[in-house]
Image (cartoon, rainbow, N blue to C red; front, top):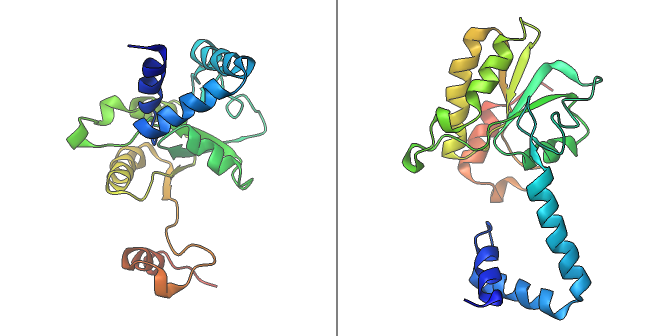
Length: 197
């Protein structure tokens, strides 16, 4: 197998990149400067060698603790549970959340053989239990998919007996959309989650 075929094969393993896109990326790299390609290769090696999971929350970090967990100004009584580490950045970009995070590393999917033992659930429960009641609220921010909903129900059942308040991100109609074009499930969730004005 040639170097081009090997790189194309490796790139096509990435989510959202098929064989054609992978081949286009390889050709783009070949047309660019060798320095650019070497810089990309060094960055990939650096990520492989230096980035790890935070010892507390599971977010990606180059240190034992990620930037959020090591920040003493964060509200340690509030934990937001997300499926994947990249979702931490999505919530952080809002500038509205000052608590801590916990990354599950996926969501429950029995058909794919992913149960609680394959996720970072035990560490979350130990973190809550070990806080001695200091964690007052856990926000479950799993996706609105069938698996995400199942994960949120499972987590609620496991967390509630430990004492903290368990909440779920609101679901509903996106800002700027017309009701005419919103699907029925989204409208139903918006009606169920309505609040006083």
